[in-house]
Image (cartoon, rainbow, N blue to C red):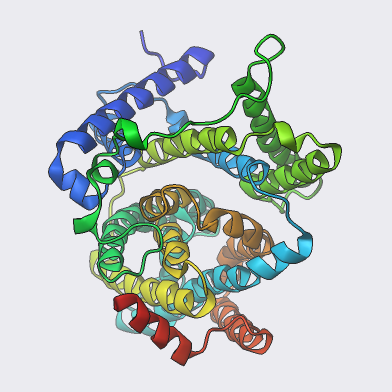
Length: 459
C-alpha cells in the first residue's frame, strides 16, 4: 500500500499527509502540555521529532520516504524566494550598508569554527591519541556548521582518499549538533528573555497565554492578507504562490546552470532564489506590479514553508551512527560546543547593533545544527520575522558561499596530503583580517558600548 522505494506523486502526497498530520498533533501537544509551552517548542519541531521517532529513521511505523532529506533544501529556496517579494523598496547602497557587519559575522563564524577545531585536532587531540587521523578535529565543523549534507560530502571524499571512518564521525557530530542546537538554543532563549535581551518577546513568565499556546482569542486575530486579484481571473493566493515558486525555481535553475558549466562550483539554491526574488522585486517596483503583491500573503506562504521545512528537516535526521572513537569524540564535542558558543555570542554582541540576540540565536541554530534549527529558534524569539535576520543572512551568505565550497572541496585533499595545518592556519589568519577590517570600517562595536547595552537590557 505504501511503497516508498520508488518516488511518485503519491509518495509526495503521502509524505505531505503524514507531516501535516504530525503538525496538527504537534499543535495539540503545544496547546495541552504545559512543559512544552514553557519551553516554547514550536509544533513544527514536535512534528519533526515525532517523524524522527516513528519514521524510517526510528521505529519505522510511519511510511515516510527517503525524500524527507531533500524537501528541506527545496523549502528553504521557497522561504528565501518569498522574502524580497514581501519587502519594501530598497536601494543597493542601503542593503550593502545593512549586511556588511552580517557578512563579517557569518564569515567569521565559518572560518573560526573550522580553524580552531581543526587546529585543536592536530595540536591537541593527536598528541593525546597519536593514532587519530590529523583531520579528526574538522569533523566538528563538518557536522556542526555543515550538517548531514556536508558530512556526507566530506566523508565520501575522505573515504576515497583512504579514511573510512570519516563519514560515520561526520554524521555523528551532525546528529549531536542538531540536539545541541535545540536544547542549548531554548536555554539561551529563555535566559535572554529573562534578562530582557530579546526585542520581540518579554520574560517567559510574563508572556500572554496566546503566545504560549499559540491560539489567538477573537479580539487579537489579524487578517492573513488582502485579495489583490479577482478570483474570476486568478485566485489571489495562487497569484502570490506562483511568484514565490518562480523565484525559487529561478534560483534552482541558476544553481544548476552554474554547476553545469563549473562542476566544482555549487551555489546554494536558497541564495540564488533570494537574488532572483530581489531582481523580480526591482522589476515589479518599476512596472508597478508591486502594488498588487500583498506582503501578508507572501509571508503566509513563507511561514507555511518554514513549518514544513523544520518538520521535514528534523524527521530526516539519521540517528543510526556508531561512534567508534568515543572518548576523543566526546572531548571534541565538548570543546566544540564551548568554542561555537563564544564565536556566536561574542561576535554577535560586537557586530550586531540592532536585534543582536535574534541574529545570534539564528546563527547558533545554524552553526551547531542546520538552517532549519536556526529558523526554528528565530521564530521563537521573532515570531513575525521583524528583525529581518533571515533577509540579512541570505544576502550576507552569498560571498561566504564560495569560501565554504572551497573548504568542503579542499579540506579532504589537503589534510590527506599533510597540508591540513597550513589550511587551518590560513583560515585563522583570514579571521583576524576580517576582525581588523570590521574595526577599521566601523562595524565593530566597542567593548564599552557592548557593556553599556548589556547593563541597559538588564535594567
